[in-house]
Amino acid sequence: MTTTSSGIQDVVRFDAVRKVYGSAARTAVTALDDVTVGLRQGSFTAVMGPSGSGKSTFLQCAAGLDTPTSGSVRLDGVELSTLRERALTRLRRERIGFIFQAFNLMPSLSVVDNIKLPLRLAGRRPDRAVVDEMIERVGLADRRRNRPGELSGGQQQRVAIARALVTRPVVLFADEPTGALDSRTAREVLTLLREAVRLQGQTIVMVTHDPVAAAHADRVLFLSDGRIAGALDRPSAERIAESFTRLDTIAAGGGVR
Ligand SMILES: Nc1ncnc2c1ncn2[C@@H]1O[C@H](COP(=O)(O)OP(=O)(O)OP(=O)(O)O)[C@@H](O)[C@H]1O
Image (cartoon, rainbow, N blue to C red; front, side, top):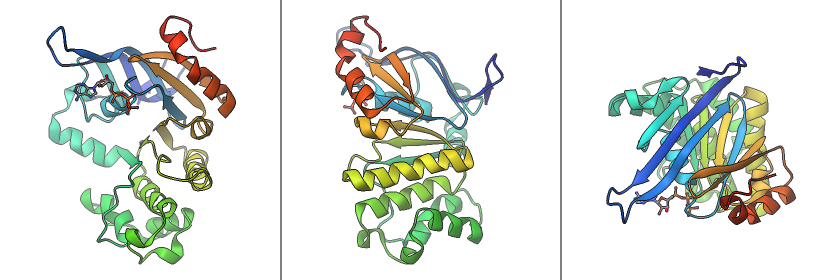
């Protein structure tokens, strides 16, 4: 982890990160442009911005799935550019959890086996008490033997959350985790994420288009044209929506207030 001058720890730290896709001057796209930001341990951050503003690139670089063109990305204090592919894979497996809009569960495995999977992949023997507690927490104790296809979308996302948290990752990256859910189910999923922050000090970074989802976070970061255009702390959904619609102004130098 990176300790800041105030002694507070950043689990994810970007310093002057640029990501340019393509090399020809005419076709190159700057997806991230001089991004400097630190995300503290136990914080829940939502990342918002228009389509193409760099949200996925931000998540990919933070998770070591993509390499910045320049600048530094540190995760849990580790400078990602110093790691080779194997070490990166291990770091992802041991220290990062992911959830996606499309759940990405293994269809042939039961709920309980899906949840145990990342532990098995990491060569760790699943601790029954830990797995049971996780299943209990996401409210699926009576569904542990079901396959994903037998569950609703909200239930499947709850399995994905349990699977992502069972390894006790230092950071959980969530890419549009409520994008495929109705608003009531989305709220249940977001409440679970919030609980993980409150109960186990989980650090969460969530990309979302939805101001209501973003309002569950402690902090909302706005990206516009690959730059951090502003941040809001503990904003309401209305405030987020209002800032979001002003992003064009921000891109022109207005800033989020
Ligand atoms: N592999 C790639 N090759 C070339 N350009 C890319 C690549 N990936 C992303 N880009 C470009 O980088 C910019 C940022 O893309 P990114 O996917 O990070 O945006 P986003 O905010 O996540 O968008 P969306 O909300 O539509 O998913 C876009 O202009 C995109 O076209």
